[in-house]
Image (cartoon, rainbow, N blue to C red; front, side):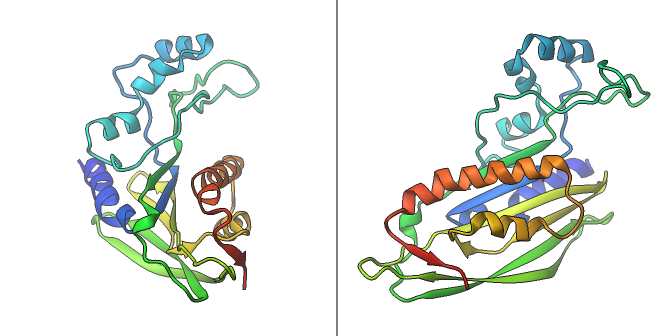
Length: 239
């Protein structure tokens, strides 16, 4: 019950996706496979490369299908296998007492709004980016704290007006089964140093290998959905 309440609150209250032109949600949701699928069926599908069957039992897909959580977000087509563990020193799937099922734990979701609805600006626009920490404690209360600020400025082209494009990044990490941490970047305009900005957002704290993969994936998404659309319209400078 608490888990459903948490995802419902997170999806509707903590991530105001409609307030931004682009909103990206990334991290470990700790959502696995639906319990109705057997471990042997997962292993057989993995060995045969039948990812469609696995994705049909993915809990996040089911949450979005039933419009219970994150249904306003989209996800790129998955063409790779889930994460899973081997028994130590072997090529055999996890045989420990936990018997963790292979699953798609790390996710990247995105939401797009029409950037043409944002008023056109004529002047140079300095912008302050703030990183927020949101956590869910045992009493289901969300708290916030400002962690850091980074300044960016956009330089207007001499022959064109600026069409501002705002982005929101949210990085989620599980602390324990009852507590998650969200690192949410406030509204900021896309700059040519976006990749460096993402690293600034993640450089504090220990980063695992899969987090670098997420960074690369998000950078590709941003380049695809934003940079290509506003190319030849805006020139950028970083403060």
